[in-house]
Image (cartoon, rainbow, N blue to C red; front, top):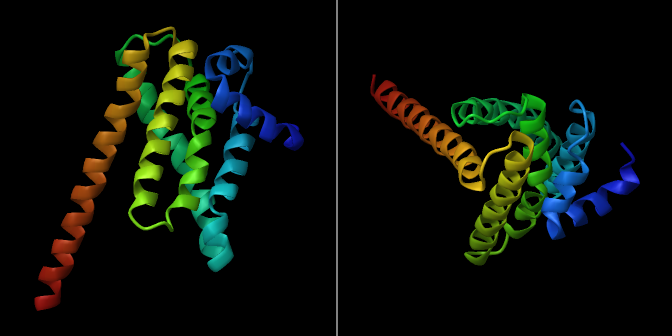
Amino acid sequence: MDFAAIPKKAQSILTKPAQFFDSVKGEKGFNDALVYYAVLSVVGALPSIAFAPMAGLTMAAVTVVFSFIIAFFIQIFLSLFKGTGKFEDTYRALAYGYTPGVFSSFTAFIPVIGFFVALGLFIYSVYLSAIGVSKYHGISMGKAAAAIIIPIIVVTFVVSFLFAGLLMASMIGARY
């Protein structure tokens, strides 16, 4: 992947997502999408890197690993919705759809408003990913959005319950 082309690619995704996903539909494998996502992850981690370099870089690496995990869960739901694309198509749609999400870390420092800006960027990322998933898998935007949103909700609940369980176990353990 040409690193100099990343800003132009990001601009195309943000301003003309349908045409962008049509133009990259012929991409094979993970390489271009993975490099693009990794660069975005590092850019998104810059505020953290400025204060704690190792923590910021670790966060970027974990984000890249987590992208494959969430793509796997979304692929499962896409198969339930009769999507015709492959896992690599799902990954590409999510990697490119993440583009607005890179800016959310820069808004996190703004009290109250930062949360709402980050939420809006997340919603736009889901929308862009749904466009890509819809095109790659030959399904409606509604099914694509559901295939993306349902796993996010499920993973959020599972992680929340695990965290709550660990918290409760540590509180009970602290008594004895």
